[in-house]
Length: 554
Image (tube, rainbow, N blue to C red; front, top):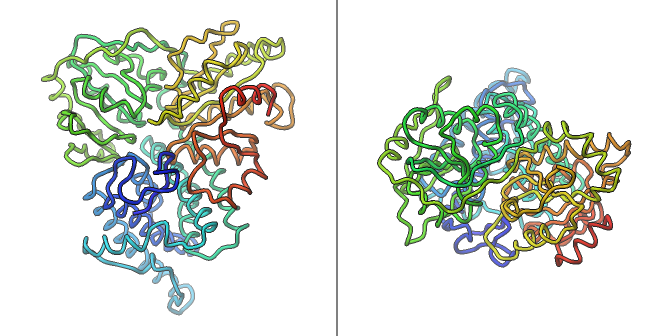
């Protein structure tokens, strides 16, 4: 195996025996083969689009396949084998339609040398495992070509996750699907550096469009997030803990648990569900339990009731953990030995009755903490306070905004973000989204004229809200360039959705981003040089120096 798609990859070089995330060599190889087969499907999807051959569902299938390979989403090998078989089947069905359409249009058969991914086939799992060894990242020998291809594919995985969430709520955009297949197919071709860089930048544009689509899906369906005080304690009823990112699962779980005597708690990236008006009518939505994803071995054990993982991040259980029979997965997530909740039938709902019946037999959650925290500062809410914010900036009450969005992780070098939050001057405001917030969202940093010094927009995809806020402030101050705003970017990354967000920021022209705790291992020195020269990307440094630089606008 060779995997370096996440920030915690071994030695910041690559995992070669077992993933730091916990995935086995076999899982990593099957994920590589799934990406390889998705590239082959994309080759034929591009030809189908050229011939105007319409095959409904191919784009969404590609998005779902990419999503399954995101870090800490799926550890279930049989699920990957099934996905590979489905991909090969879809590819060959599409191939037949394309060949027929080509013959009808041009009066001759299609004759073209195609990439191996567009023609290779097997139905034998043993052959899958052998093929995977030659289909992975290192099959591209040139380091810089490999870097640009992987930067593209890794960003696509994040965008695909957001596209899938939007589709679940009934919001789709074929332009996004078309780009997913265009970009995947491009990695099977010998392109120039300029062409590859162009696709990476276009990936940033599509990430913006996809996050905008998901924002529309979420707010149309559940209302605009509101400033909300979220309870952090527990009640005496048995409970279900819901983690991940999928709001449709949240909605259906709340409906099915209503009146059952079972409470519902959010965990990790599901915390922002508490901010949506549609969910506030459910009295049995108690609040949020615990912290970010990497604490779950202890927190899931203490919760006592069942846990529903709607997406990543899953942490493999330790030998001392006893909650395997209480974990349920759904959507792109999977874990060996857990119960997987099937997809909903068209027009129907998922069936969470197994989870609810188990919850009734479980003890109530053990209290980890008490008190509350405040969130719900997505773009609609912040823009409602725009006059107050603009006046605070003009008067000097707010000297600077620091965007500290992104991911949390388990390594101690992420204490940097907690220390930055503590040490920032009292005339600064932190804008955050994603689970990076858990490094500081329970600190009492006070407010500036009634504006809290930590403004949490929501999940990682709600980084889109932070971009909207920045663009509206640019307009309010009559500035020509987003980089003229008193905003610094101190971004934490871990998995592939954060890479999509990073590419989105670059597409929007943001300069001077600090990225940590480390720069991505998949970015080669030459590619990094281009990013530094064009966008002034830089690694985080020490807390004191970085704060001084940010306050000076550097």
